[in-house]
Amino acid sequence: MCLTRKRQLELERWNWEGDQIVLDTVVPASRPLPGHKAKDYPTDVRKHLVTTHSDVLRRGVEQDLRAHVASLPGGDWARCTGRTAGCFDYRARMVADFVAQKVAYRFRGNDAWLFPEETLLLRAGDCEDRALLTAALLLESGVSTFNVRVAIGRVVFGRRQAYDHAWVVYKNEIGTWTVIDPPAATVQTAPRGKKRAPAERPPRYEPYFVFNEHHVWRIWNREAPTRLSDYVARDWLKADPRQIGAPHLDVLQRALTGAAPAALEQLEQRFQRPLSGLFGPLVDAVDRLPYDPALHFDNSFVDEGWAAVKKQLAEFAADPTRVDAFAVAAHGIADFYAHSSYVHFAAQQPRVATDDGPAVACYDPGAPHGGLPRPPEYGPTTAFDLLSERFSHNAEVLQVDRQTGAAHWQGRILSGRYAQPGDAKGELLDHLVESATWIPEHYLQDAEFHFRGALPHHHEIAVDDHDRDASHELYTSDKQYREQFELRTNTAIVHVRKAFEACLRT
Image (cartoon, rainbow, N blue to C red; front, side, top):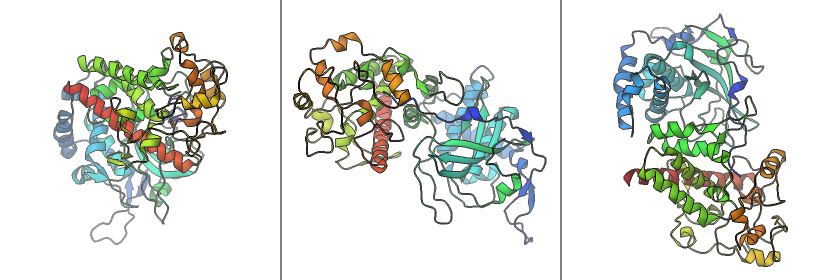
């Protein structure tokens, strides 16, 4: 149905406070000294976070960070300096956004770690440099050292691709450790000719050590090296991961980060884990409402879905405090691109270059076929043949023969059937979720509802998660599927951002 059921960060697995203090905190500095031949002279890793009496970092907060906050719509410097509820989380968000937007990622191989003041001056650094700067700015802005850790370890993509990485974890105001890792577009090329690898699924953070200005701690991880110095000294296979999140949350974050921090903060609060521990899925509040197929663009309720999106956007435009209305609209926009056949046909036209990567032209609800140059075709000579044996139909709902049912959808943008009577599909969890979902009666009573039984099932044609599972039939290779996922995600980001800006101009 939606982009919400995969396991995400697995942060609950680790004790981010640290499991055991590391007494040997000396590591090789890997930087040349004037008049000294040795490069790897000993240094203490903790000194990178000693921010006391650093006027450079103080100016970084009071001048650079303040200017950045002032440049953001709705940016509120008073919240960055206040001590009321929400102020510390707000300043953490602003520091993360400042580093993401103003400090470029630059792969530097196994060069020396820069001090935060150096990274601030250069406005560029690799993962360790940006992590150290993020942590230092958090500390300088008044966040307690007990609530900040720099983590070093690895980030894992899929089942095989693991890269050495450094990031920040921050304990928020409700006592939950969260990752702060500046977003980036690609996984960087690894040393020794390793091929560039895309982020196929939400990355998994696996810490080996964490530290602040006072201590270094080991994390109980059987993959971790025994000594801190051994790990720091090795040649890192470096990654610069994408901003993390379930696909719906990822769309919102990438569409609104830097443009609407206050709205994004409220939107992120709509995503919760109903189950505690490792297996809790990240669930959007829209999915907890009584199921409305139009809000998710399921069962080919395309016109009805866009009418619902338009209504929610109008409510938000009339009252910008109605962030909940925008959230429902944004969820619907993302679902349209993930669930419908629009991008399948739009992808046959020239691509659109965006900051997030290639996209297609946004769907236009007021134009014939949504702006496509020709009507969609689902005949036997196409890859989207509705009568193909690859696609199923729901004989319990369809009241005509399958050929007549398929002909009903020729020339129209369609989406897969979902939660129809007697029709649950997919792997165990998906099957149980669909079985527990039902379509409201007024949809079932529609005179043409039975034609929706001729649609392929949602799982057979939707592209709403990073990975192609066994139920998917439209794209027969992982490469095709990943290309579609990228196009659909990037196009949704563009559309959500445009919708938000249009509402503010109204």
